[in-house]
Image (cartoon, rainbow, N blue to C red):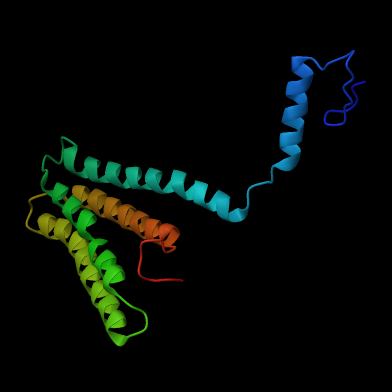
Length: 171
């Protein structure tokens, strides 16, 4: 006799059909699975939203460079600043040890270098607009792209900086 899914007695005379067996398995699986925790959904949201924000920032940068009215491709060089901005932080994290004062000094020096790189990325299009190499509207689009991209890089570092198995720092 077959009752509710999960509570069935199978005798030799009647075996469950494949549909009944499939429904039973699905029902038991849905009962045993847990709802995702807040940490799981935060990771999924970050995996979806942060690359999307980075793409929006790159779109602003492309608009500032590639629109026919603006006609200058010099702002593409800010991509170099975007690529090297997290490098000092990564080097300091690998070389730092929390137990001594040199680890803190390395981390502070990395913050200074990173700040210099970010300020240079914002200053480069302003200087180009000041000397009339690019138009002011193109400078505005590049600055907007910079803001979105650097906030995305900061978001990646905040969300995914939990200390992996290979880091020297244990949290």
